[in-house]
Length: 426
Ligand SMILES: *Cc1c(COP(=O)(O)O)cnc(C)c1O
Image 1: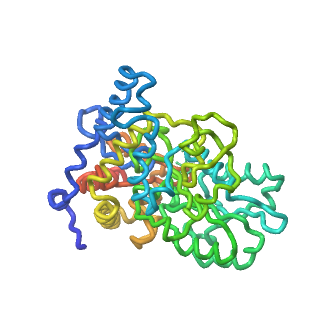
Image 2: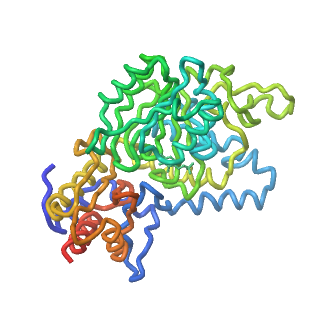
Image 3: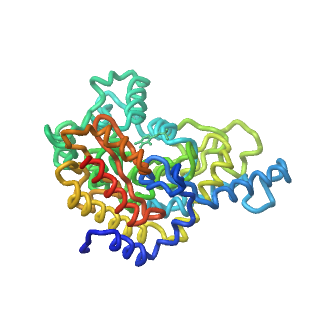
């Protein structure tokens, strides 16, 4: 695609955008001067679908009108409410419906999955994560090691980029696995790295792990709703994601979890259990012999927070109406390529991009480092905020910018770069 400079070109791209109308499905925060923010922060908290309010209100109304009877015999009864989310969630991650469940929060699900899939033995007990893993993932893994009596200094293998580089290389990961594979029990890696925006080659990593008898789990916090995924075909063992980033389901909303069918059907797999994971036919006999549901639902603990699930349903309906990840990804690649084009053209001497240039190796996010001598990255970030741009700052030195195809316009990107350029040239 050939891009051109100038605001008129951005407007032309917006006019030609078949997904443009979805912006109206969202509430866009406004600046003090009344104009909409340039919101490029869907990687951190996705915007509110306007219909989320209706969906949540429906459940509040049902609660008011029906009390406990809201569990049955009404539209979207609470008893099976999570089931109404399974198909659309499965579509987003490339899974069978029975491999996916919406439950708990992301870090909780990581722990539950490690209880089942991190089963260290004397020979095979190490866990591979990246050196720059999201802190919560790092804490979860370290505490799992300690819980099993393993010193993280011995049991935790950290993947690092080469000196002077920002991105992980598959060959380096493969070399580590070749060298220490026999002692590794689990690899827990991101689909999209939160700091650099790098997409890891998930299919190849799963193949690599399994060839060495290693389990592989994915943290898809920055991947779900951002890039196409094929968890079932890639044969990933498990995956977890949150719903409040690209999935636009509200702060702290309930998370998602994938368990590959070949594991989910094994009801003897050790797990931390709760009554919502118990066979639906006999759950209310209130007997004390746990019988796991032979799907991902078998890891549920509690009856879920319906108000949160209602907001997720609102968001998933929009994804379905937009035609799923394929058209969204097409627009997303174009948005991000346009962003890259303008950055290189307008602020090349002040800004470097650490995210891969290859569209296959990135989602929508670009991570920018400020190289300007007269301005620190933090100062530049503040200038952006003062001028109506919402993006985010991540220590030590990155401004993350994520144009998302459901509600961002090409003109948002034009204006963002224009503001950035003015700030850099001050
Ligand atoms: C956002 C994010 C989290 C947040 O975890 P919660 O349990 O939802 O608070 C964890 N890990 C990664 C990689 C993230 O991007």
